[in-house]
Image 1 (cartoon, rainbow, N blue to C red):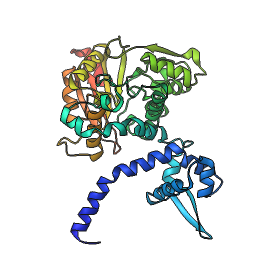
Image 2 (image 1 turned 60 degrees about the horizontal axis):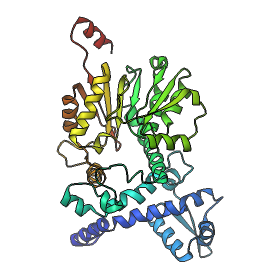
Image 3 (image 1 turned 45 degrees about the vertical axis):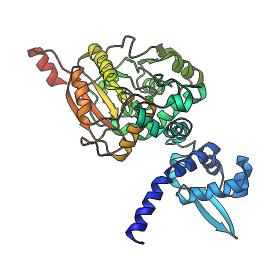
Image 4 (image 1 turned 90 degrees about the vertical axis):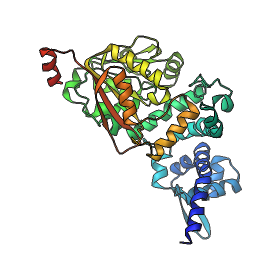
Length: 388
């Protein structure tokens, strides 16, 4: 085991070398290592991988061996020659054909997030995001760096769908959402999140005829919705560039039942709904803008309706979870927002007029918070409240 001093130094090295680990994963994804091995009928040696990737023999061998050390690949030796194959982890999360693949999100992190993290010290000194230094983009244009090309925009949209393929079920089942027959997703390219809700929906939800996912990205929610509800018509609400990319790169076989509406949830009128979903939205913005958005939602939300906020939530003492603390630094580097505690979210929602705040820890990266627009006072309202 070594001395306590040796263990402390090893812990320091593990922290300092963390960026190297990230780059091994990013490079292997970018080069297509995991896809090549997934497509092969059996384990491949270095020469076979080099032939398929068009890479150098020396560099490929070093990368494959590093992946073995990280338990992303397995190695077996035959007649003195090494043969490589994907581990279960790589097959599940790093291979493109897998329904749980995170490859697009990892490539987005490699090309955008990683570049911003090289300026963390400057971000701490200045207290603002580092888009100007990383990409030459004004710091107030939060999504210009992400949308700096159609390719990067598409990467980001696909990446967020991958995130919700893992975390969607836990946050959508944290509360019973069946009392909310009309749902609007203001989640920003996070539509796959809702697919888990449709699969578990109660018969009451089968009466839904129109669903409007706001800031709808690729339209994944729209397609899932109409596949479950034959009478449903879905409006996808998003900024013009995202609508254009969605129409260009994603198929909509039921075009007559899915429509797109361009808009900005800070400026344009929001449709009435029973429940608004904000998934990974509020952490992008400072308190004043969060409050402005929540107040707009409260004005159009039907009495008895509510808002479901999905975020990576800090502990109340702000000492964890570690992943959320790192996410909060990422918000400093890439946005004008931060991750928050339950109390901070409660304060924002209450200031916008929402009550009955509840938090459900999912045990995953993302948690769910539900708050309601209170019904008008009176006997009739009281009866209706009990029914809800």
